[in-house]
Length: 308
Image (cartoon, rainbow, N blue to C red):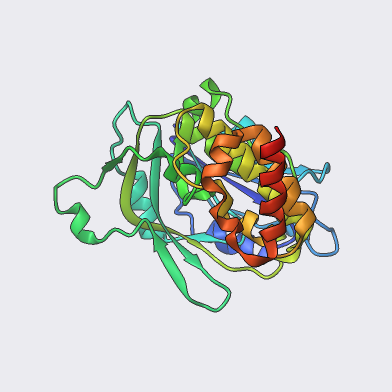
């Protein structure tokens, strides 16, 4: 019987995918699903595609080229486990820690489990999130209850940072956006709004590696920053409607990157923010615009407000 389904979207990195697969322990209660997002036949040898040695291993080769969000949704349609775990093909698990995680008895009323991961930066440095030590396990139970559900869509927005009950995803119709950038943002936001609490396991299970040819790193630029900012704004709007917007959306990293590159795109974001979040929220949180390059933007907005 399958208890855990591990879903891995893949495109053009077979060697790294094999490393990821090799980090997953062979168990009869684990299903591994790889969804290939129309990889290049000149890069990937489909006759010798990466394999996992476990009993329940499935590969799906899509030709639509719709990105990781689409690939993850395909994987979810084939997932048979009670719990769904995601991984990126260029990352890997720590096998002993993953075995320990899969062996923990989770309360029936818990739908989301966040585990520790290592996030590697370009310069070789890294941080571990959440910051918990072995002393957190000294109480006799490795499970910590967290009521700050915004963690799920802010600091732990990535799908591979958490384990989710499949029935919870289906019941709440939570799936990934099939878009080029930020496909996981609304997925994680809907997750955070669907629960009042979640569990944290203080076990370092996963390593997210910096990869120069990842989609985010390859296509850094104003277009991506602006579209990611619109997603951040959409997330803030959903949280506001759910009564959980507890941060200043204008300090979002994508907003900041737009601010430093384009006056006009900044203005568009302010107008869209006013329409989505309301002038009252925006006036209260526009402190970022005290920066000199955006003095004219602040001045223009103030004049518009006075005339309205």
